[in-house]
Every structure is written in C-alpha cells, then in structure tokens.
Length: 114
Length: 114
Image 1 (cartoon, rainbow over the protein chains, first blue to last red):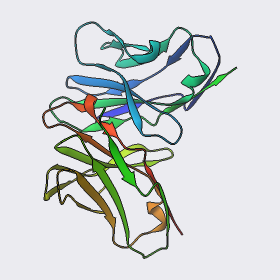
Image 2 (tube, chains in turn yellow, purple):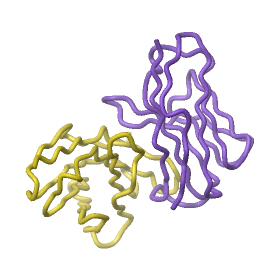
Image 3 (cartoon, chains in turn red, cyan):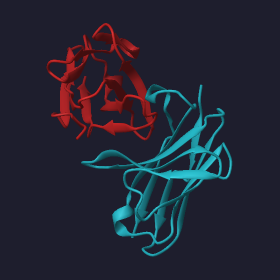
Image 4 (cartoon, chains in turn brown, cyan):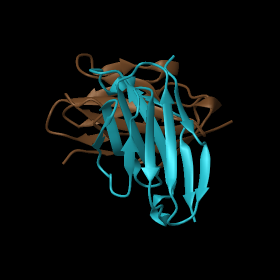
C-alpha cells in the first residue's frame, strides 16, 4: 500500500541554522512528490514538487528537496532558517495519473527559535 | 492568484444536528475537494467533484454528503453530526487535467461537535 512517513513530528532549530525535514514514501509506481507548508490558521501552500529529472528541486523561500529512488526518500532542506519558517510541513505523494489522489504524511511541526 | 473561500471559519455544533460547510472558488477550476485534518492523521479525502451536479466518494466518506450545485460552489454536509467529526476541514480546487501541484486550499473550517 502507498504511504508517506515523516518520522519527526516536531523539529526545533535556531534561527540561521540549517534544516532537514525527512520524508520516506512507499509506492511501487512512479511517484510525484511534493512538500506543502501550513502556516498557523491557514490552508496548505505548495513549496516545491518533483516529477522527474534532476533529483534536487528548488522551491520557494530558499527551500530545496532531494529525491532518492534507492532510499525512497524526499527530504526537505534549507541552508538558513528564519523565524517566519515556523509552520507545519507536509510531505505528499501523488499517484501518477490520478489528479488530486494525494497521500499526506502526518506533518512535521518546525519551530524556529530566535 | 487562485482563491478558495470557506465558510464559516469555525463552528460549534451539537451532536445529532445538521452542519453544512461551504466552499467557493473563483478560478474556474473543475476539480474540488473536501479534506479533513486530524491530529495524528494528516489530511484525508472525504469527497470530491469533477463537474457541477456530480460528486464522488473519497477515502473516508461515511457520515458525510457533498453537493456541487455549480462550478464555483462545493458544500460538505453532515446530516447527523457526531463527536468523531470534530476536526478541521479544508476545501481545495484545481483545474481539470492538472496534477496535484496546483491544488489551492482554503483557510479551513474548525468544527467542534459537542
């Protein structure tokens, strides 16, 4: 069965530090992978996406993610976090060819300390 | 920018009562979705719709009905609200044929059933 695992429910980092949020997926087909961010009292917004090609994809606000087929992973990274990055981050798997058929991870809450 | 508006922002309902959550989008999107967000479960798909006057069951449709009277409007109906339906509900939309990256989410409706 398809699934997405975000092993860290909460991550706390200091402002200016680097960040990695982990994501592992399980899917035998071609994965489309996304990271969404949810700021307090808001809906989800797309950060970045991976379909194919270069395994490192760039997103908004300095975020990037690296796809690894061998590790079934899609980790999110940022070189230097800002307090405004505090939010909940969701790794999402889309089953190829199924518009809107999304499988969400449980989310990782990021707290950036000043 | 795509706009998806949900109403109400929050609601308190009594067990056994009827609840209607509304969603309106102004982007001529064909696909609309209702998701439920619970702590420990991420987002789960309740109902979706490809076209006006037609709805489809998602992954957790039990206890919910949906209505798509027009392209712009998509409602979620709880005929007999139960305690277990306390959650945050998100509406989302996307254009026909687009992949998941173009999902636009509303800001959510926080429903509390007492």
